[in-house]
Structure formats: structure tokens, C-alpha cells
Image (cartoon, rainbow, N blue to C red; front, side, top):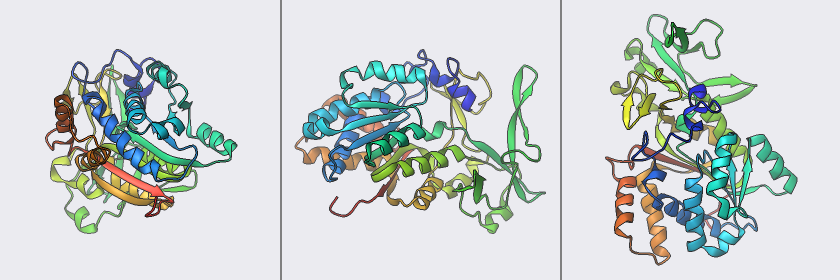
Length: 364
């Protein structure tokens, strides 16, 4: 999954000829139109205006071509020019290709924007300034595109076993992982993965009553990369908010009968397929985020959960913030964008929002 999406020059997200939106392979909240960035700007402005900081930071990871950053900064300059004059927009981007796209898109905001290749580089810069990161760290539709491990329930062995990708002639297939693989057997509870002597909670305990009736071969995905990302982001945040907007579920929802084959899927030209091994680099791959695992990871890092809600409810609250600033009316095109972003049959129910914070008081 990582190779198919992120290999330089070959991965799906590394190819500029892979557009997003009506003419591309899939829709995103950003491709719906600039209202999404404007509503985020309204919410972020409300948070940061009440957070004492001479240099507030908005840090985005997974900025793709920079369109959301452009929409957000454009709106922020209009709705809160005093904050815009002080804010720094940090982009965490490991890809040289995507940093180039973002730099082109954000040329007029060059005074506000700073890039970081890795969390390590960001930590070093933050520490060198003598001031922790105070502000907001966020990702939009990033964590569902991080590589996952697929686990299948083996009733005869009474444990979860990992299935891995193997070569099959000129193509690929899946096979039960051999003993000694990274996640060869999680046992009955899938509670933790030990990596570099750090415990990263990936799943709460699965009740024995559920395991007793779980069909043989029932498949779930776990994403150590997403949990690690959340903990790295939490470590970077001195005071403020950490949030993600993404496809996802809470842990118990992964065990719904209609998800017996897991949630990983591919998108190509607005068609969904479960043949995720076909056309590597030519189709988008995604798996639902486990918001329970992220919430546990944040709490283990000292964060407090402020909200775990639908995108519909989150953006509706942001629209109220917009109204409080005196912008009561939406233009007809904005109404259409808002409906797409919030309607249950479009993006409103499919996307969830997790917001956690550190050092925020009722007065903040």
C-alpha cells in the first residue's frame, strides 16, 4: 500500500496527472470547493483568537497539492486579518514532488508558510526556537491512506493471523504470513503492538462473547502507522488542538457483519473496487481509520478528547462560527458545497472528526 501510493514518480499520490474531483478518481472535501477551507478557517480562528500566543501555528500534514492550505489561508486573511498577520502555517511533507506542487500553489503566502520533511525536523526547529508548538495540528484525509496490516480470525487456532502480499506470476496475491513476521499473530485481543519498546494501543479488547461467534476468516485492518503518527503529532503539540477529518469508524463498528472482508478498497475513475492489488500506482487505496485507536493513543500521550463527531456536525458548528462573525448568507454555490460536505448521503456521515487538545482551559 505504501509503495503503490507513495513511491517517488510511480506512486498514485506522486503523479500530477491523477486529478481529484469530478474529472479525477474520487471526490474529497477539498475538491468540493473552497467553502471547506473557509469553514475550517472560521473554527481555527475562534480557537486561536482565545489562545494567547505571539506566534500561533497551524500545522497541516498530508497537504497534497496545497489547495486546502490555499483555501484556508485565503479565508483566514479575510475573516481574521490580525490573526493572519501573526500565524505561521507549517506543512509536514516528506515528498519532494508534493512540496514542489505546494510551493507553487502557495506562492502568495510565502511569508506564512514553512515546510518540514519529517517530525524529527519539525521537533528540531521547534526546540531550537525555544517555544513549543502552540496552535493546531491537523490532517484531512491522510490517515486512511497510511499502510495497514490485514488480520483474519482463525477459528481453529483461536487467534488473529496476518495476511501478506506475495508475488503470483506476473501479479500479486495474498497469503497467510509465515511465523516471525512483523504482525504474524496477535492472539485473541489485539491489544498492543510493541515497536521500539513503545506500547501503541491499536485496539481495545475484543470480548470473548464476540470471538465465540465470529466467522472463520473475518477480516479487519490495523494501522500502526496511523497510531504512531497520532502520537508523534501529540508529542509535537505543546498547547492547542490535534484533529483529523477522515473516513473512519469506532472499534466496535469494524465487526458489523457487512464488513466481514474488512474496509480496504480502491478508487479509480469514481468506481470502487475491492481488487486492491490490481493496477498498482494507478488507483487510490484506502482503509477506514480506527478512531478508537487514535483516541487511546492521544490519551496515552496526555491529550484530552474534545469531540468525536461526524463531519456534518463539525462543519455545521463551524458555519455557526461564520454566522457569529456577521456572514449570515451563503451564495447558491456555497449552499451546494455545504450540502455535499454535510449531507449523510454524500460526505457528512462517511467522514468523522476527532479533536483532542492539550493545555486548553474553559477561558481559552
